[in-house]
Length: 188
Image (cartoon, rainbow, N blue to C red; front, side):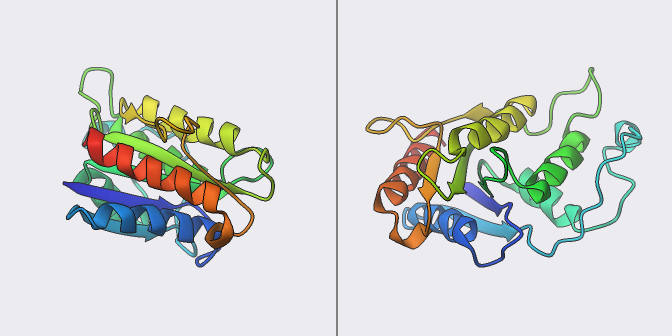
């Protein structure tokens, strides 16, 4: 089974990158094939709502989304990570999500990511720093793709993995990621 982790942080080596890779490492130990993508420094043109993707299931922009499209098609499970900015996901992750309209080309065709398992990890400065609302942003995207959305399961039952401050030092947050990764493995 294949699991993709995407860090939506503009900081290539920050807390979100660490948290997503931590979850992937936990899954990799169980012989799952994993891939990691950081959106940091990626050239991703914002969606302009031209709907050309409805004609041929590809976007008019030839940019770094091509690799992301291929990885999303490849995976069975998806972990999306984001820092919390103003109680929501990062702009980088939102632009990537908007460009995924290519997977919803028409009302007649099936949704291409339908049935895959998805979950989220968010990182903020404070314990109640917007992680849950940013996770709701991630869940809305996953549901719009008709994906199955999971949380970190029994014990904590957050909407996903939640990190506070330094990811490496937040043992409670890391436990939510281990729970989330374990739940993802079981669901796949």
